[in-house]
Length: 614
Image (cartoon, rainbow, N blue to C red; front, side):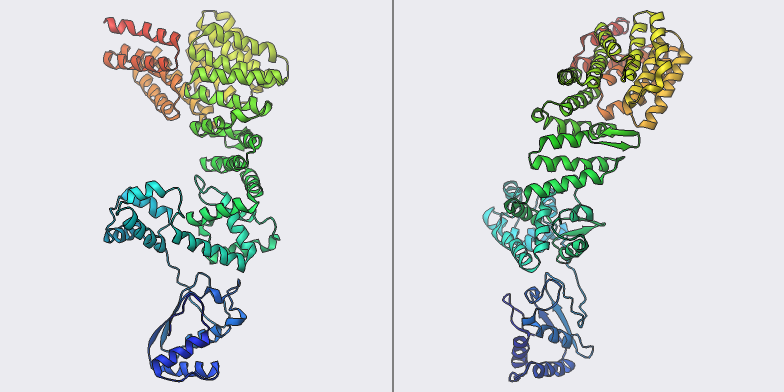
């Protein structure tokens, strides 16, 4: 069979030319006569037939257009069971003619190894990490491989690394590749405008941390197509392999995405596509129980940034959902529940200087202050909490003013500025006690119980502790519940009530495990370790302190980790392990100096002196 050219020839011309060349027969006057001759010849002679680039003959339903209906007749002859031939058809679009049984054979991308072998045969120096990146970017596409190979060989003297360093940010930099992709878009625009618009709108998705989209994320971009037609449009793009379906979710090939992004930005639909996508992510994630849930919900933030909607991006961080540890917690809080502190720090700091004064700004400063407090960057945490308070006071947001005072007090405890810390907690009680925010007075009382017990004011400490026991059930926040138990445990330890202290630490540990609050659990373990040390149970002390250390390293909580090293130093010294004791004291001093927390450094240095003297 004569091979089809890119400018599609009629099936009638192909058949007649094939008969003339192979059997010296003059072309029949009618197509039907020529087909019958072809049928007879193929019954007696085994041949392989290739029909190349068939898609221009097809409509959007995979049927032959009127001017090329003769192809249907030809394929029926070639598919006759009595015909002794194999016919291969290449087409980017599927054939859906009811009278013709076409078996699809999908060509997958080549494996990375095949790319490496091909490049090597073409005198290209194969750098395997770079090869992996290029292969992934082009999904193993054979056509891309051949185009890139020629360019790298001629223009970069076979230096794969040099080529990728210069061109990795633009997958369509090669004209031949871009022309190939453009031809897909141009054909689609003529054939099925609704599918064309969907394809370029899909360029608004990032395909990064969340690399694949559920079908609902695809369908939400068909705002101008009736819902009953959504699946038909999506299926069409699938059949043309312009979108990829993997495990029930969709993505664009990186080269298609690059072109889609370019077309979308020029279409006038950039803003609406991103806003629709943001709405989808916001409302499709109902609860935050896994990192994947958190990152899917955060995708809306990036779409709002794309359209410079900073206030809406801030709202994404503050959007409250249930999680497996509690109800109605902002997304920013869920992130650090999941141990994703640095990701949320980067997310907030990217926009915080552009958010207008208001509740959102105060709350973002509050969350950012908490994140820095958890990670042990105490002075920066204080600055953000002070800023949160300033905005709250200006706008008369009393709750956030109270929360800021409480948080600054916690930071002062980590610095071991006892008098300053007490001042802030007393201010909390003054503002919150007997109001709708009384629960904050309860948590502040737990902190004051601990601080006064450290100062030897035992009766005052007992009085504050009683207030906590009386109103503990009013505390709503997970941190408030967990840390109130921790501070009660520390209070009872200081008062010599070890059984009560053990009970509080154990309750805190259980609560932390149920609420997935790693920092509280680590502090509970540290407290239990201290109790074991007081009782002379060195093995139990070491076990609990090392468990706490492991958790704190995971969440990079430097201030709490320094305290654990301090306790390990004390424990090792009493066990006679002087070298280990000194190593832990040095680690504690180093971490406290990094904060910096000079009074904490002095505390450790005083404790370390006897060991040094011995």
